[in-house]
Structure formats: C-alpha cells, structure tokens
Length: 117
Ligand code: 5GP
Ligand code: ZN
Image (cartoon, rainbow, N blue to C red; front, side, top):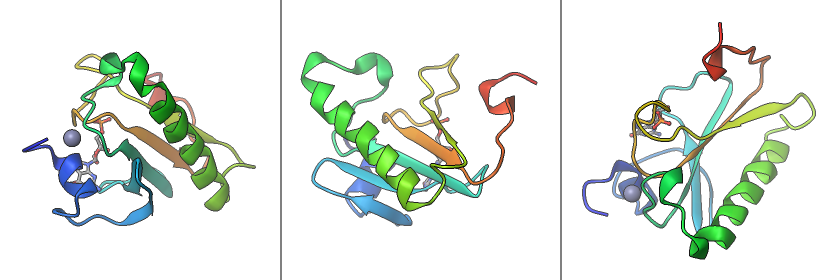
C-alpha cells in the first residue's frame, strides 16, 4: 500500500531493525521502545486493523501469532512472561493503520500498558 510506513518497512524502503522475516511476516524493533524487548510484528499484506481481518486471513493471523511466540522464546522472555498487544482503531490507540502486534517484555510490565493505573 502506497504511503503506508509499515508496508515501506516490509518492502525495505524505510530502514528498520528487522529481527525476523519470512514470506508472510516481518518483525522489527519499535522506534520508541517502552520495554527492553519491544518488537512489532506485521503481515506483509496490508491489513489496516484487527477489524479488517477476513476469513481468508485466518492462516496468516495464526502464523503471526506463532512467530510472536517463537520470538519471545528467542529473546528469552517466555519464562519471565511478556505481553502481546494489538491496538485497534481510534479508541484502541492505534496510530499506524497497518495491523501489528506489539511484543513487550524483559521487565515486569505492571498494568499501566493496559490503560489501568
Ligand atoms: P500503534 O499505536 O499503532 O499500536 O503503535 C505504533 C507503533 O509504531 C508505536 O509504538 C511507534 O513507536 C512505532 N513506530 C512508528 N513509526 C515507526 C517507524 O518508522 N519505525 C519503527 N520501527 N517503529 C515505528
Ligand atoms: Zn501497510
């Protein structure tokens, strides 16, 4: 998708610290990390938000979730625990409209990232 920053990262047009990629998904470090591990996982396919997932995306979404778990193990945050977040839409706080998971970990995360103080 033209003018989508995450499509450009997936296409290599904009640099990013890519930690994993395959034919379907790309994972890279967040530009403004809020935890020692803060990885964004995206499908190469431009799906704007969680609300745009269609039945034909089921396998892709399953693969995205699988890769998130694999990266958590690779980064050694699986034993301590971690958080997988997907913001959806305006009230969900979504800023970039190319579907993505945030994989957060490497410290006790508390509950503030859930919007609770
Ligand atoms: P959202 O609020 O849409 O769930 O999160 C978007 C995330 O993308 C934010 O955590 C932000 O720091 C990150 N981000 C925005 N622009 C860039 C960029 O150009 N490169 C990288 N690596 N991360 C970005
Ligand atoms: Zn996109």
